[in-house]
Image (cartoon, rainbow, N blue to C red; front, side):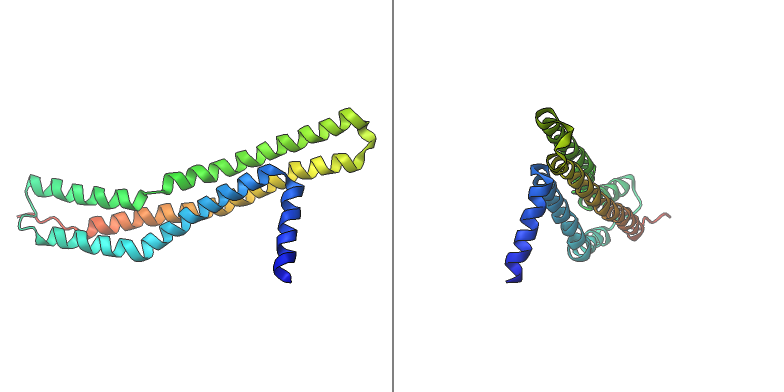
Length: 175
C-alpha cells in the first residue's frame, strides 16, 4: 500500500514542521492553481480573445480618426486587463510564502524556548523538535516562493509580449 505510506510520510512531515506548514501548503496550492490557470488562459483563451478583437478592429471602416485611435486604445486596454488578470495575486502569494516561513521559524523557536524554560538546556530531544518546527516551514516557504517567482516572472513577460503583439496587430492607417 504505497498510498498509505506516502500519506503517512506527508503526515509525519507536517507534524514535524508544525501547523504553519499546512498554511504554507494551502497558500502554495492556491498560488499554483492561479499559475496553471494563467498558462491555460495564454494557451487556449487568449488566442480566441485576440482573434475576436482583431475582427472587431478589421470590421471598422475608419482606422485613422481620433475616434478610431480611442477605439483601438479601448480594445488594447481590454486585452491588457485580461492578460494581467491574476498576476498581482500570484505575486502577492509569492511574497507571502517567505513571510509564512518566518512565522513558522518564530513559532518553532518559541517551542524551543519553552522546552529550555521548563527542562533547561539539557533536553536536547525536546529542543530538536522545536528546531525542526523552525526550519522546515522556513525551507518550505522559500521553496514555494522561488518556484512561484520563476513562473510569475515568465507569466508577466508573456503578458507584456502578448500585449505588444496585439498592439502590432491593430494597425492604424494614415493618409
